Image 1 (tube, rainbow, N blue to C red):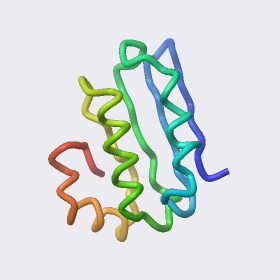
Image 2 (cartoon, rainbow, N blue to C red; image 1 turned 120 degrees about the vertical axis):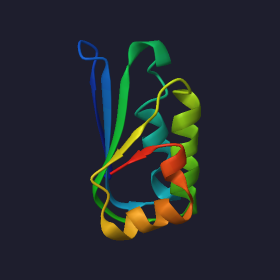
Image 3 (cartoon, helix red, strand yellow; image 1 turned 180 degrees about the vertical axis):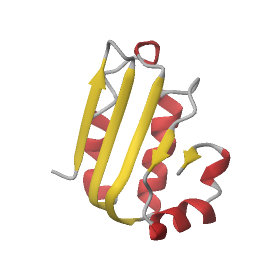
Length: 100
């Protein structure tokens, strides 16, 4: 499955890992990883993109929806491959997210 998540209530941390293509095909599974978690239940949200091989504009939209859900947090986009980091930079996502 291209989307996995780990939610640790004790650490108040949600980590979402995306593998392969980050596109509209995984919209439902990506949304399901965070939708049932209340913003007050977490203090850190990270999206690990180390295994992602492709990202399109719908993925950018999914990240914006994630950001909207956790509006009081700055979300970490971690371990971005070079090509994906380029897409995020072109879209100026470093203004809204912590990109590494």
